[in-house]
Image (cartoon, rainbow, N blue to C red; front, top):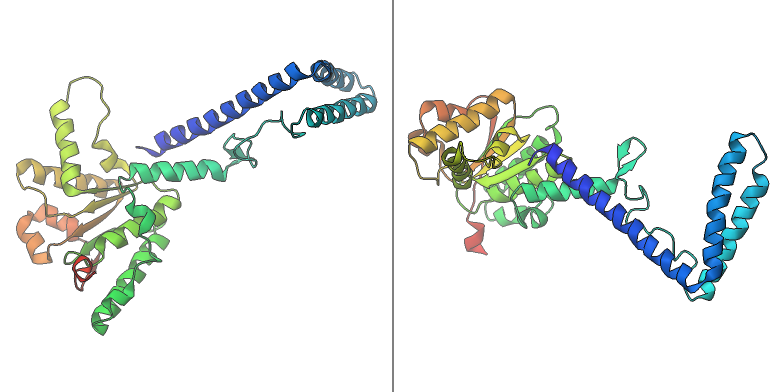
Length: 315
């Protein structure tokens, strides 16, 4: 899902909130007017005084007496609501966000409520599920590596480099290769990177190599049939793509061509890619042809070599 689509979806949700708030207020007003003839008469007069204030102001007249009458009517209306057993603000519009009145905008900036919806949509679009809610830099447990001071120091360095990658992402959109045995923290670190950048407003896509290839394959075989939305385009355009478990996919001509096209296109567009793999550099070189290998491990790619025991086993 593109940034524009995410914004449109968030905007539609905000507009729906505002519409519902207005409808609910209209409903409460109807209840109040049906229970009090005086409230109904006051509402009619308030409508007229509002128009009178506008007309008087345009003609250059004194609007103070009209304003005072308006305030008196509103005060009496509140008294009547309380006498009916309702709060004095019963018929007012109850927006879910008081800062922007459910418009999504405060002045010239997006309201925090709109930003929160966009973050939620980016998390949903990232395909990371609950991982992004429970894995962060803050809960990456370095004590797991304390059994070996050298390993602990290397993992401390990797954590610092990952944080630095996020910190500098706006100006240095480079690539990362997270490489090392199963269960050493690669998924946790890549999830934490995604989490931080999504909250900064970036569109991040996270998926396994096999799922990514499956989407490209699906697009290939549906080509020319209908106008169905592309499944693979998102991988070519998102600011950050995280490819999990590179090397576990079934290798054939289509797979290799897809991986090359994906990495090459993103490189040419200057888009960042984070890859995690359980394969060693030598195993990567044997599995992939030179043109792919050079894009996985080539210039501009920082390599984070994970070490340690499998957390899932030791737990």
